[in-house]
Image (cartoon, rainbow, N blue to C red; front, side, top):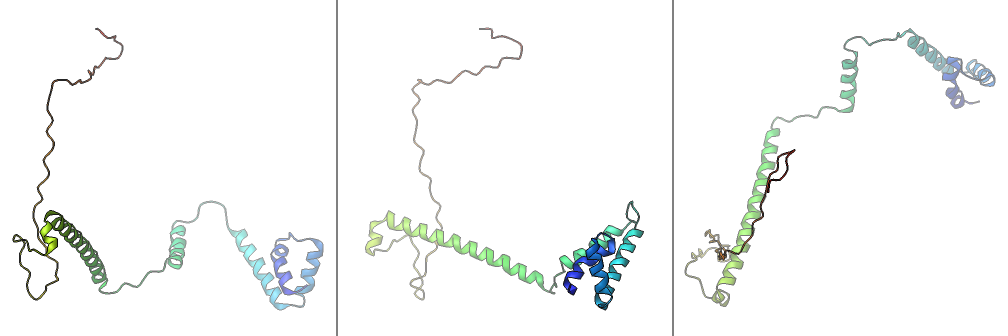
Amino acid sequence: MGCEEIRDLLSLYAGGESYDHERTAVEAHISVCAACARELDQYREARANLALLREGDAPPGTFKTLWSGVRADLFPKKETRRFAWVDEALRYAAVVMVGIAIGVTIHYIGRRDAVSASSPTAAAGVVDSALPVQPATFPNAPRLIFRPRVPAPAPQVEADGNFYLPRIESIPAGREKDF
């Protein structure tokens, strides 16, 4: 047998759990291979150390010590830059600017549709006198006009006296209706 097959059997041999033919193969191999003999010694030492352990609770602080090492390996700390808050502030500012741009675009589109629908002469090129004049330097710039919208009046309902409201009664528990 080669070293790979013997290494698979070393832990069983060290624990005394191997078959007779495996035991003889391991003993024959470790007599000529120093690397496998060292590995067998390490298995025996590990088993001896495990046998020294006693049952019961671990000493105080053991879990914390183990977990801090595991956590450091699994979740390494990221390097924090000196001005990391600047990056976050710029991200928030970008989000705010995108929101403002969306709001202005929606307002402009709504205003343009309202102007073209309300005055048929606006489509023909006649300028509405209520709109401010644009500067000559930016002839195609969008106009931002903030006018309050007047809500449409609610339809009036005439009361003719022919309506029915259901009667709601409350009957206490254990009593009967008295009508």
